[in-house]
Each structure stands twice: as C-alpha cells, then as structure tokens.
Image (tube, rainbow, N blue to C red; front, top):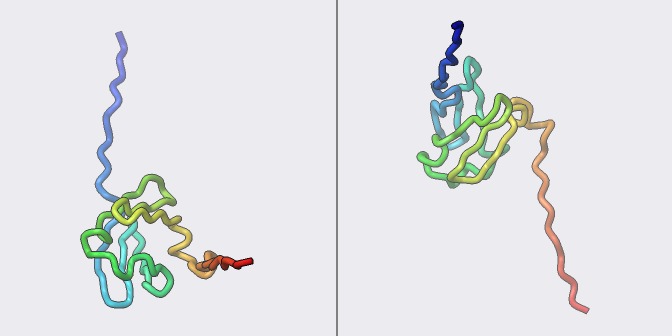
Length: 95
C-alpha cells in the first residue's frame, strides 16, 4: 500500500512592522521593505502601536489590519500614486 501524507505547513509571518515614526511605518514583506507614510495612509495616523503591528496577510497581494478594519492591496503601498485617496462629501439641501 502506497500512502502519501500531506504535511501541514505553518507559515512564519511573511509580514512584519519593523519601525514606526511620526511620519509613517516600515513593513518587511518577505524580502521587501515598504514604507507607509501617514500622508498617503492617514487611517493609521492615530492608531496605537499594537493595532498597527497586528497585520495579517490573507493572500500574496492583500494585507489586513483586523483591529482597524483596514484592507490594503500590496500594490497600493508600492505605488500609492496609482491609488489616490478619494473623499466624497455629500451635501444635503433643504427645500
């Protein structure tokens, strides 16, 4: 009888916040270091250190901060100019 056993793979975190400054924070994503400036990623500016460092990587191009409910595509960190922040302000008119 020829049986093959699958080995369960436990990934060591492939994403790690390595430094936080007043201007933003650095992340190590496998072998790549990325900087997230607060000017481009304002959702993190008032977040606690504990919430910023608690980041998950559900897939190769997806990062998620569960305590902040923030999802980011890795490409939006590499090239933030391609993903401009857009804010819409609705107006209410009284008639």
